[in-house]
Amino acid sequence: MRKEENCSLKEHNTFGIEAKARQFVEYDSVEELQAFIRERAARGDTSPLLHIGGGSNLLFLGDFKGTILHSRMHDIHVTADEGDNIYVRVSAGIVWDDWVQYAIDSLWYGLENLSLIPGEVGASAVQNIGAYGAEAKDFIVYVDTVDLQTGDVRHFTAEECCYGYRDSIFKHELRGRYAVTHVHFHLSHGFRPRIEYGGIRQALAERGFDETNLTAEQLRQTIIEIRRAKLPEPSELGNAGSFFTNPIVPRHTFERLSNEYSNIPHYEADSKRVKIPAGWMIEQCGWKGKTLGKAGVYEKQALVLVNRGGATGADIAALCKQIQADVKSKFGIAIVPEVNFIS
Ligand code: EPU
Image (cartoon, rainbow, N blue to C red):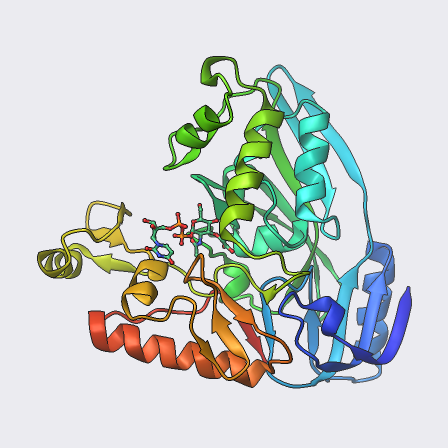
């Protein structure tokens, strides 16, 4: 276990915000985490606790007056191998994209479209990360956790995680209560590429890949290139990927808007609701490529807010508020941050 007092969080959030934590604790086993929680409880310490992954979905509004926990466990373990199905238990502290690469190298398939999503495996199970027609929940069977109040281990089935679009029980009723220590994935030995999602087919053709004879590595490389063309690299420009979720609105709201904006992009959510890309609405409001103080809207994808250098959490939050107000006034739709604000 590694403990650091008064620790800089700059390297622990992809926005690159300068903030400090009173204490930063990295643990190397479930037992170490349990011992830490139980010892704290025995001392009656009720100061704030925050478990983080890669910090790719966090906005620190100031210094954190408590303890930040982070996993240093890095094991990948096959738990069952039956016919086409392979079940793998993966430590929460592994970088998500390292896991995707490891799976493809091991000839375990399914995760290709989720290549290059920033963050760690634990956060994938909290956030239900998704891209190019795939979501983490499609592959998660169980999530192992430790209760941050008692130190007890608890296993959640995927059903108990209540997954939805960028959503799970860990973001609502159980927010902050459990630390994810391992995620159990169900992958396949057979490669079944999903290339229907807008843009993939064309990108494969542009690269000269034959879609009837595609390899998982070719699909992964194509997804990586599509992402790199649209999304900024956090090491070059601080950002947290999509800053807002795409709102899911009643069909009558969509119909009202499509009378006015015939080209409005949208996806069917269910029979009664339609998902509208927040990035499109933000662009329509004139925000794409604009800057407010030290915070800005990325020029190639308006859903991404960026740190133009030296921004504070408050700078990013001020930009967020202004964009929300403009989208509300132009479209009558409330957009909600996907990023977690930490005060
Ligand atoms: N659009 C614009 N202007 C913009 C951005 C988007 O008009 O500045 C339009 C696009 O032309 C397209 C539609 O909005 O018609 C959707 O855009 P895109 O395919 O880029 O995806 P998105 O809805 O903006 C979502 C995810 C991304 C994921 C992509 C691709 C959310 C919150 N975001 O973005 O996830 O990579 O789809 O699957 O659902 C992330 O979570 O950090 C992330 C990057």
